[in-house]
Image: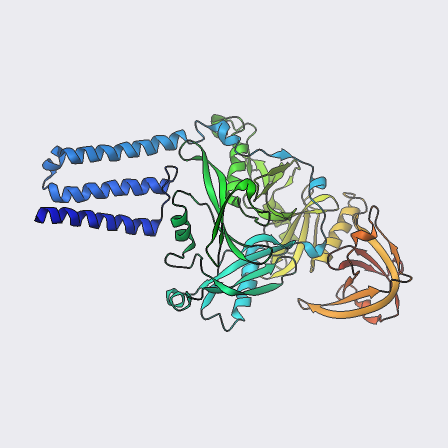
Length: 554
């Protein structure tokens, strides 16, 4: 009787230990998951240990016990299957399959990458966004004692703008305990072009997040809903109506047990209600931006570049082998977010043979064969322009300026604040222009291109127009500590000279012109009814002024 009770108790303890392990580690019940194999081996060892402590009293008995021998054999077999599966899934024996996991298309840079106005250029990196987010949170006295800002800061396209978005999280276990009934009340959005930071309060709080401790922890919630799914990096996004979601990519293994990882499906989890929608990558809504994690896309391209002539060549001869450069950035294009990184030879000669753009929603990959400076060389070049100020360069962003591939770089001081901007020509990286504002930097860069014969008429730009008329309305505003005058002309008698190929329909409505006082101080002397001529570049929602009465300046 006692032995029977002891066995039942041992089984119960074993089940409880396994259940606690599963609840904490939440491995996927899937043979492609290394976590599942770890769980299986640990469970077998635990069973054998529990049996051995009850039935075996010496080393000799252990050697002679059939159950332990069979159990040990099973453990060895499982380890062998795991080891062989790892080998057969590796690039060593599957080089061609790994190479073909991604299929880059060679494209034309000037045709693919549109030129954008300076007011649409994302000037913030993640570190700068974190500073703004923390500053915004510090001003919210009703929340700052209970919540902190998550460090996610996902970059997305929101209503046609490049935005970083991040949720709040509970400041501690005690703060979670006292607030979890209502949930997390808000998230933060930061416009990467205007630096506008907004704390968006929700009618109903976020109930499912990374900072939850029990069943509402987003990873545990997903595991119990989808026990066999192997999830990749989760990202926090908002749809076009501002509803917060967790975007949960599901790994798909296409080579053996553990190899050829890509993304096969994606689960969209409403962060407020916990409701989930399971869709294929092809059926994923277009408002979703981050299905394929950037690190995975970089890894897939590296497989393609290094295994082009087989595995042995990738290790020894390395003929024709290419790899991505260190670091990457994002480019908002066609309502999607694309990962940008340079491509260089495996010898690491600090120069690029081209660069790639990889769509985070579809995995579509474009390759641009443009030789030039590697990103860190361009960063050094930009820092050299302001070496007396000791500013540090951020990782470059790729732009099309006057149909020239251009690195756009923010320059920061020791406090991490952006003080200046630089533009570096990728193909001729000794051509560097800097400015205190993005508009000033772009204008100096265009003039530099024209003076060096790199791009004809770059100073004016292909989209530069001119307007002359009487001022109907003029107003002043202060943005980021800088004064701007906004001018509207009377339509009657207004003379518009549009850029080649441009129509009036290409201009914003109403037509408003932004005149920064720091660059054009003479604007202060103008008032309603005065006649004025402006050279400008069309933008949204206002046009960028490039010259004030240009004929008089000339």
